[in-house]
Length: 207
Image 1 (cartoon, rainbow, N blue to C red):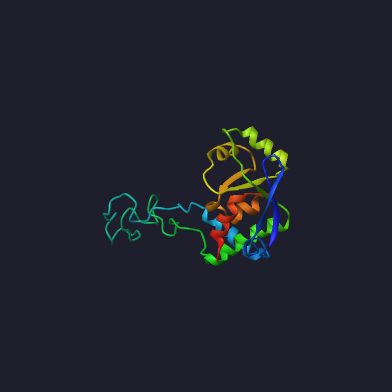
Image 2 (cartoon, rainbow, N blue to C red):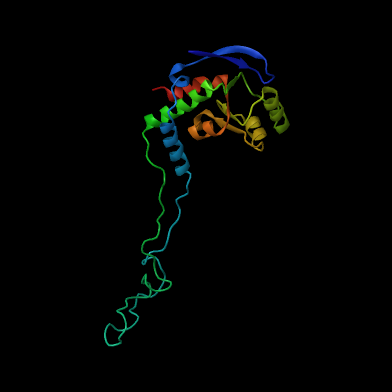
């Protein structure tokens, strides 16, 4: 079981914390991570593209002209797909683009993503990240002091001051434990965990 030092926002070491091997010592597999990231990105597609079918187009249902004797094609009503303004035959319908991946695979991919950050020494544990007020400048100074590059900050619960302070900083994201996902972990270079969030992560990923 790996042991990592816990720092405060001033950069001083305050204690140590054990990282459970079941979560932070899983060998990453690119195929599993790729599958889950593709699922997440596909799930973000709105899937609202739609067309009007023949029954959805507004228009008269009367036959345009008599069946025989005109020398023309046999026409039905004005909503025919072959006529301008008619319905569409093979257009898209609203749908979900997200492929279905087993829960065990999604959980495994999340463990792999967390393990990869620990193996690459890109995981930082803080004892707390409390702010007296909403102040973006304070968050920037903490990032500079701790040398955090493109950090993803994981908190264990509601922290309005931090969430509002960090929302306008480029390449910085604050997530609660329940929102932890593979795509954001891999997208951001540094993973910052609050010490109190590790137990919540362990509880979420226990299998």
